[in-house]
Image (cartoon, rainbow, N blue to C red; front, top):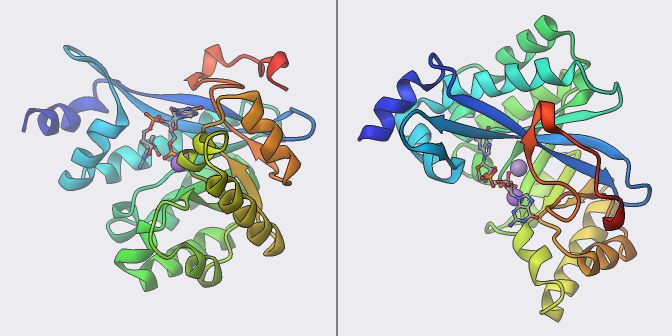
Length: 250
Ligand code: G
Ligand code: G
Ligand code: MN
Ligand code: NA
């Protein structure tokens, strides 16, 4: 496939870039961190979405070197930010099974000097499905470094609640499909409220993602959601174009 060929040389050609989307405190509106989101600027096809090329990178195994680059680049950029701001990085299941994820993170932290507690790894529960023992061992080692671990896209998988018992996540991110239904569907309101109560009861921080309306933000704040992320506040942007959060959104 042509995409695979292009992916093989994308890093060497400097075609991979990271955009950053701010995450804000639900009460104060202060930026608490940013999520790094990978973009591929293809020489002929222009910007290709990760939704298109991440699956190809996973099938071909190229996600391991690309994912390693994402971690190193994101940590390097974050060292120039405000000392309180966190950088969140998405990690694919294959990075757990192939390659030495824990060792790579450790060496990147040493090399960049980023405080471990400013790095957060976002995993989806698919990481835990494939090989739970290997994944849990790696997650524990990463967490032992002082790095935070978040469960991404929460609510979209199969047995989400059992994963909350299996591993002590620092944060859960409520999937945007729930957030976007909040105005239309009362069942989504009930489910999101329950997720927030469970996660808070377990001592986890809750981030809602995909917030696009003030009504969604108001409801989420009211039920005790801690942090917000979404187009309402800020879109993903290159590091040098990161601007403040839209005041009128708060
Ligand atoms: O940014 P966007 O909405 O286009 O991202 C689409 C999907 O790609 C999301 O599920 C997101 O988690 C994933 N994604 C974005 N950047 C990365 C990355 O650096 N690594 C991995 N594994 N997935 C990513
Ligand atoms: O799977 P993950 O949660 O990592 O995906 C993050 C993706 O969500 C990114 O591709 C980002 O562009 C997208 N995103 C962020 N905020 C919003 C939003 O408010 N609305 C929509 N539709 N997508 C969003
Ligand atoms: Mn994510
Ligand atoms: Na998500």
